[in-house]
Length: 154
Image 1: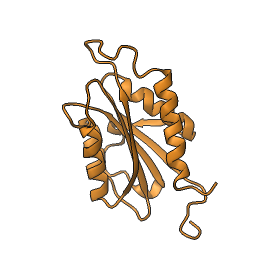
Image 2: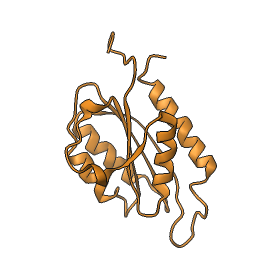
Image 3: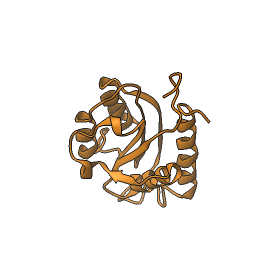
Image 4: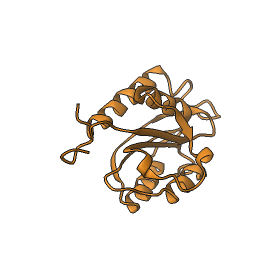
């Protein structure tokens, strides 16, 4: 850090998914950030925020909550000073309550949430067929770049 601004940002992308919808978005964001998307359940407990400056955390909407793996990941996250997060997700139905839960868990750790993004996801009933599609994935990439620019010196 120099003058309170990040010179080079270390980014990580975490997600959980049951249908594969959120994984598609996580992979698009990760691709844009030049990192790999990581399943939150594979991390286990106690991820240390000192490893990165900005995390993207995503989940599907499971009865107005994020997936259990993301909840555990966020509840056991070890915060660090001046770290940032972005939440994202997919939902077969309407509502963004799952994003609100993720934001609250991050804010309780003192991590500043820069933004949120969501798109429809195909349900098992075939509602939202074909979503997220390539347009959704491109929108996620553009959103990720905007969030990175909010904290990075370019």
